[in-house]
Length: 217
Ligand code: BG6
Ligand code: MG
Image (tube, rainbow, N blue to C red):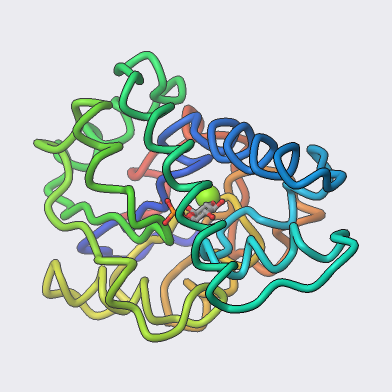
């Protein structure tokens, strides 16, 4: 691995630092059950990194009728209510193994840290996980004009820590997230399997395998 000078690390949250992909799934599944729509873990894979409304559109592909925009907003709000009820009960146990150490390793190397999550619930979640003190900036998913795979959220995160995207390492577990960070110009580490995340510059199986020193000179 050729080492470069990096100034910041931009983290996706759900599925990278937090074990919250399953909590999103549970909330979507509850909504799907309310509506009598088939929904399983395979369909959920397509929702990773995807915004709330775009996720709802995917869930509704299997619906037997169409929904108006007003109805869709209500359904997305209902899912968000389910999700918030779940995450309000989370503790630091919901951090993925190695997540806290990864953030501490960034601190030790003098790297800035930012969140580039598509989730508008990211601020609540990092409070619950008790990692707010290890994150210098949280890009506001609600302020991004275009969601992942567009580069907006990673560009906002880089700007938030006053770094060129080219000087940022980015970590994401979703195809849309890897594409977003690539489009922003970051060096992208896919967290998961090579097949899904083939556009990443490097792959690690999980956050426990992230060593910033492997990439930074
Ligand atoms: C992403 C998740 O991080 O955030 C998606 O991978 C989720 O599954 C998206 O839909 C939006 O989250 P929220 O909390 O704003 O509904
Ligand atoms: Mg993710």
